[in-house]
Length: 360
Image (cartoon, rainbow, N blue to C red; front, side):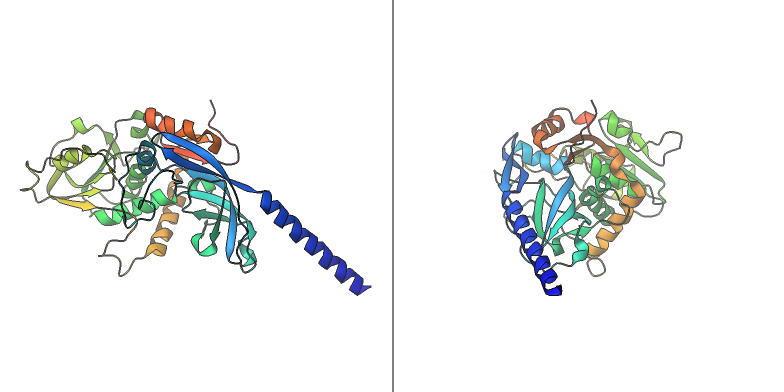
């Protein structure tokens, strides 16, 4: 009797395994590709069989990086053989791009610990409905953190890196040019420091007001460039994405001050005035990029430690409130057209794979 029962169990298990193999052969991933300047398309590909050490993830949401991805969308990215950043090296059309996916683990390879199943994970992955990765390339979400907060992780890590590179000092006057997502996150972190003052600048009203908390006195002042006095700030962050803003940053920086350049300008060019007060003012220009850690910190800091700081910051700041638009992946062209033509209406745009859309 027991032998018959065991044989029946084995037959059921074998049939179940065969069913999933057959199902996998029909399962497809929907992936966004940039095919030419201002052209995107969604391509379907059949998912390959899982290797023993791999994990299949079903995407919940994926955030657009408006600065970097708009360079890709507009064809303004430089062709770099090695940018010290896997996401910016050897870029050519057609191109699957993106690096802020959050999803749920739905299937495991034979050698993967069963504890991964159904976990929420983050991956630096292009915009796609499903993806397969080795478990070492996945980051578990902290307990209680919503997926739409977690998809801000790359930008929060960037903000942490910017603040570390700027190294603000007690009582300093600090300016942040640009209040896109990276600028907002950077200003939010800086607002936790005991600074003399913290000022932000952005040309769009929606972003100017993003850090102003109703009913409370904000630690952050939002002003226009023309309202600021030259040679005022000890530390300036240029995060606008506009090369011409670097002239404003230099003009507004005080003697022996620092300008942290976090913008990636791609192929955009602008004349920079280094013939005025810059040279005699001993102003330092600091290039800041998240793919590496400053040599001054690398003896004590590594990527895992920086991720821990970024996760804790996401818990405190809860940036989901800055998501202005949700699009299904099938409407990707509308999302990029919005960012290209009407950026003043947006802060963070997210692809949602559960069908959620921005209310009209």
